Image (cartoon, rainbow, N blue to C red; front, side, top):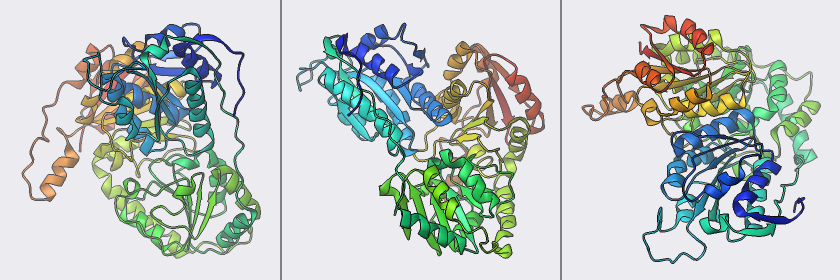
Length: 529
């Protein structure tokens, strides 16, 4: 299955660390507890940096942000019971957005009785609880099992659709020495699609008058190929997770407009729709998505070939490899795109502008201070999905990290910590609503301890604005959605950071520039227009 190192006696805790080293893991996010100490005993001297968030959910979101920004797996070490359950929400978010995240935790001892004994952190079935939120949840019972499962996880991250995984090690096994060596996941070359399928895709695209690419989260490694399609006159729209894969200032880059009616019309009216690395999930388009034209799907996961919109032609392979082969056969003299259809971008622009009007100043300020490779982490807040998702134009290579599928709150701040650790030479900004930031506010202390220059923009609307809006739309009197506004800048200072309350978004660009120059996080509150 894989190469090994020389076999020697080591605890299962040491085996975990050695395996992470062999798989080139550089950072682990976690919180030590009574039952996971054998892992922590092996970390010093390993070369792996450990980051301690203030809550395991924060650890999971930070690992998620690190994975999305770096393209490498994020790793979380939790402890039994409440520790691993705290991280479960973040693991579910990573699973839903196809993020490579490995959650490691101890479990009850090897021969722990099925009946409750009152053991510390005891659960009825810890592995079973995690099995509902990750791709694979396994409890190992030997050093050899542990080594195989770790290798399989990293092989899956590299060669298949990446999803969250959970490995549980009995707490007594963690401390037991056994002769074993960490297996290393094999290097998998990207599988090439069938030659006849490539030719069919190229011929179909060459004859299109209204072609459209929808690029999802699985397309980021194909950024160069997508840019070439743009330059050849093929418009590219992205999903939420695909945002930033192409330069959104390009005249044919349609941005993340799937949630708009105009964007969905463009998809429906395309005569050839090329979907790259996306399941076209409902959380991307907020409504029914239809396609009247011929549909080509490119995805590493065969199960996605016909999900939501069935493919007329499916190429199950790596996105970059596939698009490069298609580009090599694309007719350079293909018909020019239909001008009338391309002009409909104006309608999409108008709808996007109206949707994001209350937060237009935030988008303008972010565009003014961000450049290629910079990162915006966004919470599941109105300022993000209405104000920034489509209106904010990012340069190629930038990332917009958003908890799309599972739709959690509290994501942006800890994800920004992970993203900044992954891209220390780039600017990272977290964007929250005043309701969601309270879920993970203590992670300001983590960012302060790490000295990360991290602006945290908070849009103030007095609570859970989206739910308030939905209640009112249904004729309900708002209930439990209007929250008292704490002094968030003061809270940031109390947790070791900085804080500033702005009078309006016109002050935001200057505040962001100042925050990038300070060590530690800066909470910047902005009243909603």
